Image (cartoon, rainbow, N blue to C red; front, side, top):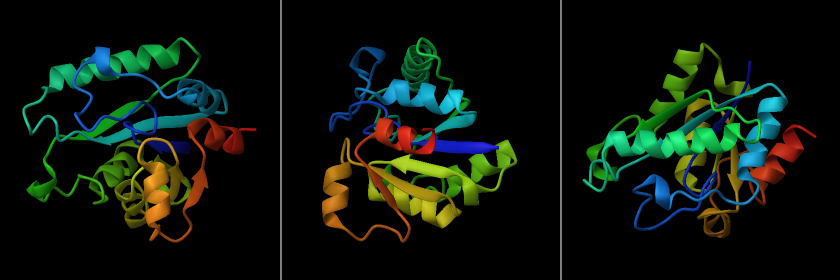
Length: 177
C-alpha cells in the first residue's frame, strides 16, 4: 500500500494562531486539494494526522472537528481526491499524551489500523513536531514551506532525510509526476 500521512493546519489548509474553530474558518491552501486528488489518482492512500488541542482548551468540540473534516472531505472529493481516515489528538501540549506529535503514537496507530509498515510512508507537515513524529515512527519526513514551514526550515535541526517542498502541490507533483 502506498501511504501519505498529512498534517492538516498549515499543510492542507491555512493555519491560525487562534485555531480553526469552525467549518467557516477552514480555508484550503491553494493547490492542496488538487494535490490530494493527484495523489489519490496515483493510488496513494491519504490519511490526515493532526493535533487538535483546541478541544482540550474548550475552543470547539469533537462534533465541530468532525464538521470541519467533513468540509475538507467534500472539498477534496469535488476534485477527485479521497481521504481514507482522520486521526487526531485532542489533548493539550502539557498532557504528556503519546499520540500528540512530536510523539509517534498517532502515526503508529495509523500503521496498526492500516496494517502497513511506515518505512515507505510519507509524513508531510509544516512543523518540526510533524517531522519528529515521522522520524520516530519510521516514516519519511517531508516539510512543506506553507503554514509554519518556512520558519521551521529557517530554524534548522530537521530530522535526517527530511525532504523539503514549496507546498503540498509540489510534493504531489514530485511523488506522482
